[in-house]
Length: 389
Image (cartoon, rainbow, N blue to C red; front, side):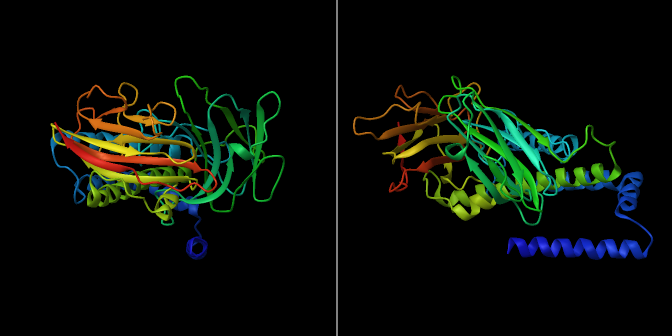
């Protein structure tokens, strides 16, 4: 279905180009006219205005605090979108950058992850190289499409750390191409638009993330001057990213309220289509607690590479992990004698291990992950119970 969609979009583009040719015009002419007339900017602003509808989506909290966070969230997405699709949009000279980080958050961004993204194009061949260092896990992924496109995000190529060939000095090289090449190969296709480097810490304070550089093996020595097409398309994609991502996650958060204060399995097909890692099992949900309530989450973890739990605001932004303990993982948790773990979500420190701070929020979203289950191990749904003081 996805390939048929891309084929349909390419056919539409071909018909549009044929129509322009009959008129003696090119796509460059259209972009130039849109920039000169101001239409490119007007549409960018219009799409951003449309993104505000996500703050009013059914179920979204309407109090001033949550709406203020929602507006900050949209401003953060706008900043991230402009950097990704306007400032660093040239796939001929890609730049690996952190699109999701401490102050740009979306889709239950993982505090234990260190994300790198770069805009690429399937017509080129690329080389990723760097040093592995001590981070617990590293994976390389290519994606087709993005949050602002009709086809959404779809997985293309995957190369995980267990398959990564690292030299004796800790360095590595990966070739991104349509056909297998070199010791480490990452698949791309004609529709590929993004490469993601996902690193996961067990202890983000002690481990060193990998050093990674990307270069275009088919490129020149310096970028070409900016063009009206680059700005027109970049502004459009950035604004559609803000509108598309915010609305998608608003729908998710609204749906999570069907099982508030529980952690049921999230549909893997949905998470994969949104750019999730297929080797991770996700338990997304909504939480809501009165001042005198806490949420007790208890589970005996299955045999897996790692696990973590995190608390988010309603807009699916991780809470501020720079200053507060809002997440816990396999290495940081304290375990019970039988190997199970009890996590407590509460507004104030209960004086017990594994406390997750709500940071002044009365409701939000939450997520439990199992990373890469061992062979024969089965995913377990965490048990949840609301307790009153």
